[in-house]
Image (cartoon, rainbow, N blue to C red; front, side, top):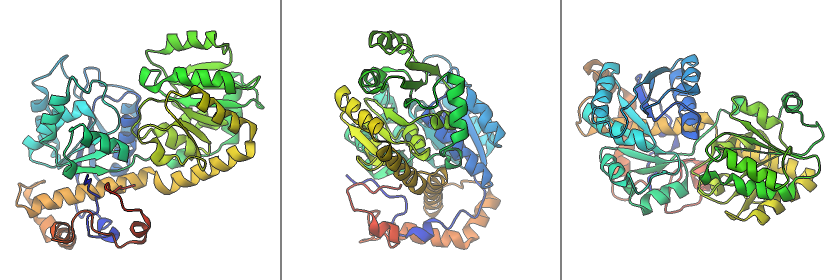
Length: 450
């Protein structure tokens, strides 16, 4: 399988040259409610705005508003709520085209399946590059596969947030391998760090002893996250006086509360619902757990590692690409409550091991999973798509004065060299990189951009 690396053969430094013009970037999301994709878009859009680009985030679900809308506005990003009609909305693509034209959008970035279906053809009609990021699992994979396949034809580049996600997309025929890239999600690392003051305050607010061993998880209470597995493991691993903190809400809440009672965890398993002070909540924990059946690259794992917590997680999706078993935490088989309980018990009984894994995890996250690093990778991809479109004589991606400026820029000549090198015989998208980081990276059928 050939999944392209976003740098091509041009090398690290050329990929970092930067755009000489200001872009008008349109991110299209389903909604601005809580979720990994939405949190990634908040950081991505805000950092692009801080770099001087015009950025709009458009939410198109039938109920698109949510807490992230205000987060974006506070960081200078324009938010447009464009609710679709229930069912398949035949007018949505036309409405998006009108909005892209009104905003002068130079690039469209769709996130997950609903925006792919509507925004990809709209971006194509607006005659600008279209990027689609797949953040995780599709809940109705069979029901809408034909729609996603049709919409994928209008996309210039697909992005998966982890290598396993990329492999799934290709094996299921959802995307073309030649258009597929891997860019790991990132988190705003300035918000996450061990915080003794927040630890004491949150524990006091929740009525938890300062000496208690506290295990936590942040996840939607849904079947795919398999919170029942974590409850069964916690029933074995929690010490007397210990607590399990479940942050999140969802359709499984009532069933899980009943299960906790059945397992003898009443009063020890705390269902605290959705919380917006996630760094402070993580600071109150001693260990973090993920029990999902499937994941893309869960931000909760990255945030817990950034907070200096040891993590025990099911070895699914992109989790093993971020969490190294025995180094930054432990990986266990999906569905194995005994294995999960055993690893949690190991961390509980060995504070030195837990602290060491937490330090290593924080170091790895700082090196590989910052939001700034993620933005750099996306901007590299945007650059190549825009320049390749200019190079091929496609319509201008911006008004004529900007096009004239862009074509006169020395950067464009350098970037065209990247494109030509990538297309030349013997070069190719998998040609060896010249920078030190690339030489240290193991070669594989999928070239990662993390």
